[in-house]
Length: 346
Image (cartoon, rainbow, N blue to C red):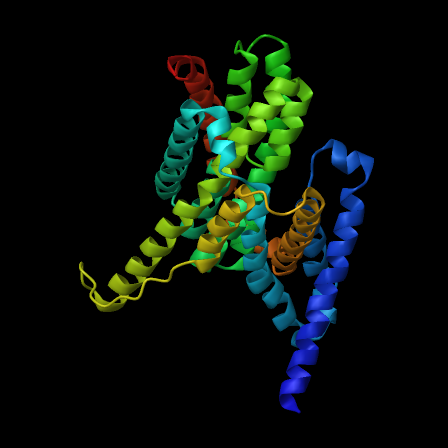
């Protein structure tokens, strides 16, 4: 009987998050919201935070396990299904130069962000999540990293907020600078610059569409290659976090017998990309899976928002946004220089 009651309570929490996610999809389909390229995931986390700072204390605590289930288990399923948006053919479509630029951008942004976070004496998890979100693919990368390092939900929400702010800014700044001639790149190079440096996939799509078809196609493909790099990053993160935990527990420089937690959802994400590359499923089915996946990720984002109060944002302070701003300037500068001087070399 007790087990049945626990399942019922969990179901209440899941249904609550599902309703919020349905509302996020409805709001995200409004013309004004779509014009800003704000995905349902971003709308979902905003709705979740509104709930956390208003109605949360008026609902039974027994619903909390269902909310946590959405922020953990459903999140991993969403990351796995995200692979249906990608194919390995995307890699060959843009050439070696784009892959090299993506690899350099991802590596330097994450490593540099972690070091800057230390200099700013930031919370380690927030610095890491902000750096991963800036370096790879915005909110989706933050969610993936959150599953790997298992941090507190409010830290994830803070990191998501930073990439949304600066990713949205870049979506408007890039086309403006390109059309005005301040950025003097060829259409193909501009697409590579955009895809390798803008935070969210939605932001890259929005910026590319504002510039032209050539720029848009290159930007989207390069951005998707960057998304693929989430897999090795998650593997490195999981290994690093496990080794750190073992060293802390044993007090030894060399930890023996430490169990490394492999993020199987990241491996399955790569398997799904491989399967999708075979083009075995009809396009309509793949489109449906992608829409369903967006809904699952929206549920995860909403659940994370539901665990985030204004007090926790105040606790994080301005440092995460300072870090995100520094990384934003780095992405624009380094990405432009590589698109201008490295791309013509290949």
